[in-house]
Image 1 (cartoon, rainbow, N blue to C red):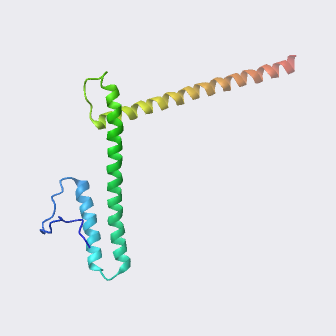
Image 2: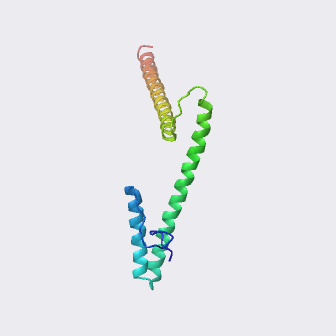
Image 3: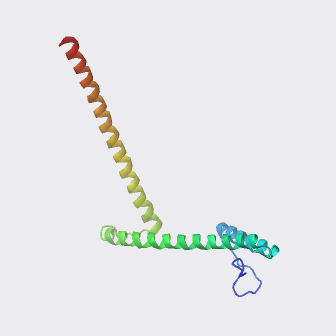
Length: 138
């Protein structure tokens, strides 16, 4: 089984993971590798290890695709706003700004709908009182 938790040159030295997430991924993959090595004659354990490594690989690929999509989308979004804004924002800042705008729009639409609902409810109460008064005092 190829080792995803150690360098491809098989020099025996470990990678120097500088982030906690990198260390956690490395540790998890190393654990799968160790498990598969310890129980190399057990097909179920081997399948578990290979499935786990495949899952990590697929997740990394999907994360890369999502990042590329966001870069492309926000890059094109930035081109349209570049004429108005000379300061170039990072992709994260652009995404935060875009999401903030969407959230503000959603909140405003919710407030507008609530106001409309209150007005309809108030008008319905007025209509009921009016109908009651006409029946009573008619």
